[in-house]
Image (cartoon, rainbow, N blue to C red; front, top):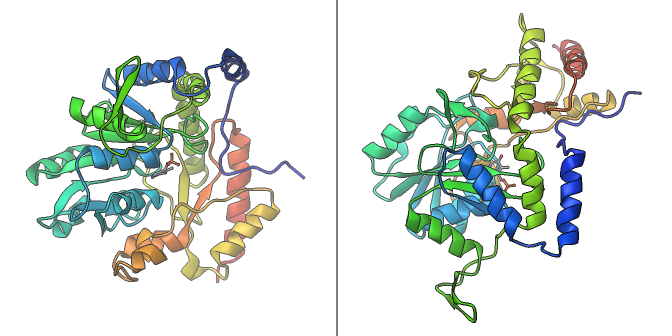
Length: 375
Ligand SMILES: *Cc1c(COP(=O)(O)O)cnc(C)c1O
Protein backbone atom coordinates (compact mmCIF):
# COMPACT_ATOMS: atom_id res chain seq x y z
CA UNK A 1 0.00 0.00 0.00
CA UNK A 2 1.38 3.41 -1.03
CA UNK A 3 1.70 6.07 1.70
CA UNK A 4 -1.32 8.35 2.15
CA UNK A 5 -1.22 11.34 -0.18
CA UNK A 6 -2.84 14.30 1.64
CA UNK A 7 -4.53 17.10 -0.32
CA UNK A 8 -1.91 19.50 0.97
CA UNK A 9 1.24 19.52 3.08
CA UNK A 10 3.74 22.27 3.97
CA UNK A 11 7.41 21.97 2.95
CA UNK A 12 9.70 23.19 5.74
CA UNK A 13 13.42 22.88 4.97
CA UNK A 14 16.16 21.86 7.41
CA UNK A 15 17.77 25.29 7.22
CA UNK A 16 14.58 26.90 8.52
CA UNK A 17 14.30 24.28 11.25
CA UNK A 18 17.87 25.14 12.31
CA UNK A 19 17.09 28.86 12.33
CA UNK A 20 13.99 28.25 14.46
CA UNK A 21 16.20 26.40 16.96
CA UNK A 22 18.44 29.47 17.11
CA UNK A 23 15.47 31.73 17.82
CA UNK A 24 14.36 29.37 20.59
CA UNK A 25 17.86 29.52 22.11
CA UNK A 26 18.06 33.31 21.76
CA UNK A 27 15.65 33.99 24.60
CA UNK A 28 13.55 36.34 22.43
CA UNK A 29 10.46 34.41 21.33
CA UNK A 30 7.61 36.93 20.98
CA UNK A 31 7.53 39.89 18.52
CA UNK A 32 11.09 41.11 18.07
CA UNK A 33 13.86 41.27 15.46
CA UNK A 34 12.52 38.37 13.36
CA UNK A 35 9.08 39.96 13.02
CA UNK A 36 10.75 43.22 11.94
CA UNK A 37 12.91 41.34 9.42
CA UNK A 38 9.93 39.36 8.10
CA UNK A 39 7.82 42.49 7.64
CA UNK A 40 10.75 44.19 5.86
CA UNK A 41 11.22 41.17 3.56
CA UNK A 42 7.48 41.07 2.77
CA UNK A 43 7.45 44.82 2.16
CA UNK A 44 10.31 44.35 -0.29
CA UNK A 45 8.37 41.59 -2.01
CA UNK A 46 5.33 43.88 -2.34
CA UNK A 47 7.21 46.78 -3.88
CA UNK A 48 8.00 48.66 -0.68
CA UNK A 49 4.43 48.95 0.62
CA UNK A 50 3.76 48.83 4.37
CA UNK A 51 3.26 45.34 5.78
CA UNK A 52 1.93 44.54 9.26
CA UNK A 53 1.88 40.91 10.32
CA UNK A 54 -0.91 39.47 12.45
CA UNK A 55 -1.47 36.06 14.02
CA UNK A 56 -3.83 35.07 11.19
CA UNK A 57 -5.45 36.38 8.03
CA UNK A 58 -8.68 36.36 10.02
CA UNK A 59 -7.22 38.84 12.51
CA UNK A 60 -5.71 40.81 9.63
CA UNK A 61 -9.05 41.10 7.81
CA UNK A 62 -10.88 42.05 11.01
CA UNK A 63 -8.32 44.71 11.84
CA UNK A 64 -8.26 45.98 8.27
CA UNK A 65 -12.04 46.51 8.44
CA UNK A 66 -11.68 48.33 11.76
CA UNK A 67 -8.81 50.42 10.38
CA UNK A 68 -11.16 51.55 7.59
CA UNK A 69 -13.68 52.59 10.22
CA UNK A 70 -16.19 49.92 9.24
CA UNK A 71 -18.59 48.81 11.96
CA UNK A 72 -22.15 48.90 13.17
CA UNK A 73 -24.70 49.94 10.53
CA UNK A 74 -22.32 49.36 7.63
CA UNK A 75 -22.57 46.76 4.88
CA UNK A 76 -19.72 44.92 3.20
CA UNK A 77 -20.01 42.98 -0.07
CA UNK A 78 -18.62 39.43 0.22
CA UNK A 79 -18.72 36.34 -2.02
CA UNK A 80 -21.27 33.70 -0.98
CA UNK A 81 -18.69 30.92 -1.36
CA UNK A 82 -15.35 31.17 0.44
CA UNK A 83 -13.81 30.12 3.71
CA UNK A 84 -16.28 31.27 6.35
CA UNK A 85 -13.76 33.75 7.83
CA UNK A 86 -14.41 36.02 4.83
CA UNK A 87 -17.91 36.76 6.16
CA UNK A 88 -17.29 36.17 9.86
CA UNK A 89 -14.86 39.09 10.10
CA UNK A 90 -17.56 41.44 8.81
CA UNK A 91 -19.99 40.24 11.48
CA UNK A 92 -17.31 40.48 14.14
CA UNK A 93 -16.77 44.21 13.54
CA UNK A 94 -20.53 44.75 13.82
CA UNK A 95 -21.27 45.23 10.12
CA UNK A 96 -23.54 43.17 7.83
CA UNK A 97 -22.11 40.88 5.17
CA UNK A 98 -24.06 41.25 1.93
CA UNK A 99 -23.49 38.15 -0.18
CA UNK A 100 -23.02 38.14 -3.93
CA UNK A 101 -22.90 34.94 -5.98
CA UNK A 102 -19.61 33.64 -7.39
CA UNK A 103 -18.73 32.58 -10.94
CA UNK A 104 -18.96 28.82 -11.41
CA UNK A 105 -15.48 28.21 -12.86
CA UNK A 106 -13.27 30.97 -11.43
CA UNK A 107 -15.06 30.68 -8.04
CA UNK A 108 -14.52 34.44 -7.71
CA UNK A 109 -17.19 37.01 -6.86
CA UNK A 110 -19.35 37.79 -9.90
CA UNK A 111 -18.59 41.47 -10.47
CA UNK A 112 -21.65 41.75 -12.73
CA UNK A 113 -23.81 41.20 -9.66
CA UNK A 114 -22.12 43.57 -7.22
CA UNK A 115 -23.91 46.77 -8.22
CA UNK A 116 -27.36 45.28 -7.60
CA UNK A 117 -26.27 44.49 -4.02
CA UNK A 118 -25.11 48.02 -3.16
CA UNK A 119 -27.14 50.21 -0.77
CA UNK A 120 -26.43 53.60 0.81
CA UNK A 121 -24.90 51.66 3.72
CA UNK A 122 -22.34 49.77 1.61
CA UNK A 123 -18.84 50.77 2.71
CA UNK A 124 -16.53 48.17 1.23
CA UNK A 125 -16.05 45.18 -1.05
CA UNK A 126 -14.23 42.17 0.36
CA UNK A 127 -13.35 39.94 -2.63
CA UNK A 128 -11.45 36.65 -2.49
CA UNK A 129 -8.81 35.58 -5.01
CA UNK A 130 -10.06 32.03 -4.93
CA UNK A 131 -7.37 29.33 -5.05
CA UNK A 132 -4.99 32.15 -5.95
CA UNK A 133 -6.78 33.12 -9.18
CA UNK A 134 -6.96 36.91 -9.18
CA UNK A 135 -10.31 38.63 -9.50
CA UNK A 136 -10.49 41.15 -12.36
CA UNK A 137 -8.69 43.92 -10.48
CA UNK A 138 -9.29 46.55 -13.17
CA UNK A 139 -13.05 46.07 -13.00
CA UNK A 140 -13.06 45.66 -9.22
CA UNK A 141 -11.21 48.90 -8.49
CA UNK A 142 -13.13 50.85 -11.17
CA UNK A 143 -16.35 49.70 -9.52
CA UNK A 144 -15.08 50.61 -6.04
CA UNK A 145 -13.99 54.04 -7.21
CA UNK A 146 -17.30 54.69 -8.97
CA UNK A 147 -19.20 54.00 -5.75
CA UNK A 148 -16.58 55.35 -3.31
CA UNK A 149 -16.07 52.00 -1.62
CA UNK A 150 -12.98 50.68 0.10
CA UNK A 151 -11.56 47.33 -1.02
CA UNK A 152 -10.27 44.88 1.54
CA UNK A 153 -8.83 42.01 -0.47
CA UNK A 154 -9.03 38.55 1.07
CA UNK A 155 -5.77 37.40 -0.50
CA UNK A 156 -5.40 34.54 2.01
CA UNK A 157 -4.83 32.14 -0.90
CA UNK A 158 -3.06 34.51 -3.28
CA UNK A 159 0.55 34.77 -2.04
CA UNK A 160 2.68 35.13 -5.17
CA UNK A 161 -0.28 35.49 -7.56
CA UNK A 162 -0.54 38.37 -9.96
CA UNK A 163 -3.08 40.22 -12.07
CA UNK A 164 -1.86 41.05 -15.59
CA UNK A 165 1.74 40.90 -14.44
CA UNK A 166 1.19 42.96 -11.26
CA UNK A 167 1.68 41.07 -8.02
CA UNK A 168 -1.39 40.84 -5.76
CA UNK A 169 -0.57 43.02 -2.76
CA UNK A 170 1.74 45.36 -4.66
CA UNK A 171 -1.24 47.62 -5.45
CA UNK A 172 -4.77 48.19 -4.21
CA UNK A 173 -6.24 49.18 -0.85
CA UNK A 174 -5.73 46.74 2.05
CA UNK A 175 -4.62 43.27 1.03
CA UNK A 176 -4.69 40.44 3.58
CA UNK A 177 -2.62 37.27 3.21
CA UNK A 178 -2.70 34.08 5.28
CA UNK A 179 0.34 32.17 6.47
CA UNK A 180 -1.59 29.14 7.71
CA UNK A 181 0.19 25.81 7.02
CA UNK A 182 -2.26 24.96 4.21
CA UNK A 183 -1.41 28.15 2.31
CA UNK A 184 1.38 28.57 -0.27
CA UNK A 185 3.85 29.70 2.39
CA UNK A 186 3.41 29.46 6.14
CA UNK A 187 4.54 30.94 9.44
CA UNK A 188 2.68 28.08 11.25
CA UNK A 189 -0.21 30.45 11.98
CA UNK A 190 0.02 34.01 10.73
CA UNK A 191 -1.22 36.70 8.42
CA UNK A 192 0.00 39.88 6.79
CA UNK A 193 -1.85 43.05 5.86
CA UNK A 194 -0.27 44.94 2.98
CA UNK A 195 -1.03 48.56 2.11
CA UNK A 196 -3.13 51.20 3.81
CA UNK A 197 -2.66 54.90 4.55
CA UNK A 198 -0.26 55.86 7.39
CA UNK A 199 -3.30 56.29 9.67
CA UNK A 200 -4.66 52.85 8.74
CA UNK A 201 -1.28 51.22 9.26
CA UNK A 202 -1.12 52.78 12.72
CA UNK A 203 -4.61 51.40 13.46
CA UNK A 204 -3.44 47.93 12.40
CA UNK A 205 -0.58 48.21 14.91
CA UNK A 206 -2.90 49.39 17.67
CA UNK A 207 -5.48 46.67 17.08
CA UNK A 208 -2.85 43.93 17.19
CA UNK A 209 -1.42 45.12 20.50
CA UNK A 210 -3.86 46.38 23.12
CA UNK A 211 -4.40 49.80 21.50
CA UNK A 212 -1.12 50.75 23.10
CA UNK A 213 1.48 53.38 22.18
CA UNK A 214 4.77 53.66 24.01
CA UNK A 215 5.49 57.24 25.02
CA UNK A 216 8.78 56.60 26.84
CA UNK A 217 10.87 53.90 28.46
CA UNK A 218 8.66 54.01 31.54
CA UNK A 219 5.30 54.94 30.04
CA UNK A 220 2.67 53.81 27.55
CA UNK A 221 -0.80 55.02 26.73
CA UNK A 222 -3.77 52.89 25.71
CA UNK A 223 -5.94 54.66 23.15
CA UNK A 224 -8.69 52.03 23.05
CA UNK A 225 -9.27 48.45 24.18
CA UNK A 226 -7.29 46.82 21.41
CA UNK A 227 -6.84 43.10 20.86
CA UNK A 228 -3.76 40.87 20.78
CA UNK A 229 -2.65 39.48 17.45
CA UNK A 230 1.08 40.07 17.21
CA UNK A 231 3.19 37.41 15.49
CA UNK A 232 5.95 35.60 17.43
CA UNK A 233 9.60 35.67 16.37
CA UNK A 234 9.46 31.88 16.07
CA UNK A 235 6.62 32.17 13.54
CA UNK A 236 8.35 35.02 11.69
CA UNK A 237 11.51 32.92 11.43
CA UNK A 238 9.52 30.15 9.72
CA UNK A 239 7.94 32.76 7.46
CA UNK A 240 11.35 34.16 6.46
CA UNK A 241 12.57 30.70 5.48
CA UNK A 242 9.37 30.09 3.50
CA UNK A 243 9.37 33.41 1.66
CA UNK A 244 12.72 32.50 0.10
CA UNK A 245 11.06 29.43 -1.42
CA UNK A 246 7.81 31.06 -2.57
CA UNK A 247 8.61 31.45 -6.26
CA UNK A 248 9.99 27.91 -6.43
CA UNK A 249 6.93 26.50 -4.63
CA UNK A 250 4.51 28.32 -6.92
CA UNK A 251 6.41 27.27 -10.06
CA UNK A 252 6.09 23.67 -8.89
CA UNK A 253 2.38 24.11 -8.20
CA UNK A 254 1.88 25.41 -11.76
CA UNK A 255 3.61 22.36 -13.22
CA UNK A 256 1.46 20.00 -11.14
CA UNK A 257 -1.75 21.85 -12.02
CA UNK A 258 -0.82 21.73 -15.72
CA UNK A 259 -0.43 17.96 -15.39
CA UNK A 260 -4.03 17.66 -14.11
CA UNK A 261 -5.28 19.67 -17.10
CA UNK A 262 -3.15 17.64 -19.51
CA UNK A 263 -4.38 14.27 -18.21
CA UNK A 264 -7.96 15.49 -18.18
CA UNK A 265 -7.66 17.20 -21.54
CA UNK A 266 -10.28 15.40 -23.58
CA UNK A 267 -13.51 14.56 -21.82
CA UNK A 268 -12.82 14.93 -18.10
CA UNK A 269 -15.10 13.12 -15.63
CA UNK A 270 -15.17 16.31 -13.50
CA UNK A 271 -15.72 20.00 -14.21
CA UNK A 272 -12.29 21.62 -14.13
CA UNK A 273 -11.82 25.15 -12.73
CA UNK A 274 -10.86 28.24 -14.76
CA UNK A 275 -7.18 28.00 -15.70
CA UNK A 276 -6.13 31.62 -15.49
CA UNK A 277 -2.65 32.53 -16.71
CA UNK A 278 0.90 32.29 -15.37
CA UNK A 279 -0.13 34.68 -12.56
CA UNK A 280 -2.15 31.88 -10.92
CA UNK A 281 -0.37 30.48 -7.85
CA UNK A 282 -2.48 27.28 -7.84
CA UNK A 283 -3.12 27.32 -4.11
CA UNK A 284 -5.68 24.56 -4.70
CA UNK A 285 -7.04 22.37 -7.47
CA UNK A 286 -10.81 22.25 -6.93
CA UNK A 287 -13.12 20.38 -9.31
CA UNK A 288 -16.88 19.86 -9.44
CA UNK A 289 -18.31 16.34 -9.38
CA UNK A 290 -21.24 15.79 -11.80
CA UNK A 291 -23.32 14.34 -8.97
CA UNK A 292 -26.63 14.43 -10.88
CA UNK A 293 -25.14 11.92 -13.35
CA UNK A 294 -23.56 9.69 -10.71
CA UNK A 295 -24.82 6.88 -8.52
CA UNK A 296 -22.41 8.16 -5.87
CA UNK A 297 -22.46 10.89 -3.24
CA UNK A 298 -19.57 13.26 -2.61
CA UNK A 299 -18.97 11.57 0.71
CA UNK A 300 -18.73 8.19 -1.03
CA UNK A 301 -16.26 9.66 -3.52
CA UNK A 302 -14.09 11.02 -0.70
CA UNK A 303 -14.22 7.63 1.05
CA UNK A 304 -13.37 5.74 -2.14
CA UNK A 305 -10.37 8.01 -2.71
CA UNK A 306 -9.28 7.55 0.92
CA UNK A 307 -9.41 3.77 0.40
CA UNK A 308 -6.87 4.28 -2.37
CA UNK A 309 -4.70 6.36 -0.08
CA UNK A 310 -5.64 9.77 -1.49
CA UNK A 311 -6.79 12.69 0.64
CA UNK A 312 -9.57 14.90 -0.71
CA UNK A 313 -10.79 18.18 0.80
CA UNK A 314 -13.90 20.34 0.43
CA UNK A 315 -13.38 24.07 -0.19
CA UNK A 316 -15.99 25.33 0.51
CA UNK A 317 -19.66 25.07 1.46
CA UNK A 318 -21.77 28.14 0.66
CA UNK A 319 -21.45 30.57 3.57
CA UNK A 320 -25.01 31.91 3.53
CA UNK A 321 -26.40 28.43 4.31
CA UNK A 322 -24.57 28.10 7.62
CA UNK A 323 -26.81 28.48 10.69
CA UNK A 324 -25.22 31.78 11.69
CA UNK A 325 -26.14 33.31 8.31
CA UNK A 326 -29.55 31.67 7.93
CA UNK A 327 -30.28 33.36 11.26
CA UNK A 328 -29.63 36.69 9.47
CA UNK A 329 -32.29 35.82 6.88
CA UNK A 330 -30.25 34.17 4.14
CA UNK A 331 -31.69 31.02 2.58
CA UNK A 332 -31.39 28.37 -0.12
CA UNK A 333 -31.89 29.46 -3.72
CA UNK A 334 -30.32 32.91 -3.40
CA UNK A 335 -26.88 32.14 -4.82
CA UNK A 336 -27.11 29.16 -7.20
CA UNK A 337 -23.42 28.95 -8.17
CA UNK A 338 -22.22 29.15 -4.57
CA UNK A 339 -24.74 26.48 -3.60
CA UNK A 340 -23.80 24.18 -6.48
CA UNK A 341 -20.08 24.54 -5.73
CA UNK A 342 -20.87 23.91 -2.07
CA UNK A 343 -22.52 20.61 -2.99
CA UNK A 344 -20.22 19.40 -5.76
CA UNK A 345 -16.72 20.67 -5.05
CA UNK A 346 -13.75 18.54 -4.03
CA UNK A 347 -10.12 19.55 -3.62
CA UNK A 348 -7.54 17.18 -5.09
CA UNK A 349 -3.93 16.90 -3.85
CA UNK A 350 -1.65 19.74 -4.93
CA UNK A 351 1.45 20.80 -2.99
CA UNK A 352 5.09 21.45 -3.93
CA UNK A 353 6.55 18.17 -2.63
CA UNK A 354 4.30 16.12 -4.96
CA UNK A 355 5.67 14.22 -7.94
CA UNK A 356 4.03 14.24 -11.38
CA UNK A 357 3.36 10.54 -10.85
CA UNK A 358 1.29 11.48 -7.78
CA UNK A 359 -0.96 13.54 -10.08
CA UNK A 360 -1.17 10.56 -12.44
CA UNK A 361 -2.25 8.40 -9.53
CA UNK A 362 -4.94 10.86 -8.38
CA UNK A 363 -6.34 11.29 -11.88
CA UNK A 364 -6.38 7.53 -12.47
CA UNK A 365 -8.16 6.83 -9.18
CA UNK A 366 -10.71 9.64 -9.57
CA UNK A 367 -11.43 8.77 -13.21
CA UNK A 368 -11.85 5.10 -12.33
CA UNK A 369 -14.20 5.80 -9.42
CA UNK A 370 -16.28 8.33 -11.36
CA UNK A 371 -16.53 6.36 -14.63
CA UNK A 372 -17.65 3.35 -12.63
CA UNK A 373 -20.43 5.36 -11.00
CA UNK A 374 -22.04 6.89 -14.09
CA UNK A 375 -25.75 6.12 -14.07
C1 LIG B 1 -7.33 30.50 5.00
C2 LIG B 1 -8.28 31.55 4.64
C3 LIG B 1 -8.64 32.55 5.54
C4 LIG B 1 -8.21 32.56 6.97
O1 LIG B 1 -6.82 32.52 7.13
P1 LIG B 1 -6.23 32.29 8.60
O2 LIG B 1 -4.81 32.72 8.48
O3 LIG B 1 -6.39 30.84 8.90
O4 LIG B 1 -7.01 33.14 9.52
C5 LIG B 1 -9.51 33.55 5.12
N1 LIG B 1 -10.00 33.55 3.88
C6 LIG B 1 -9.68 32.62 2.97
C7 LIG B 1 -10.24 32.70 1.59
C8 LIG B 1 -8.82 31.57 3.33
O5 LIG B 1 -8.53 30.62 2.44
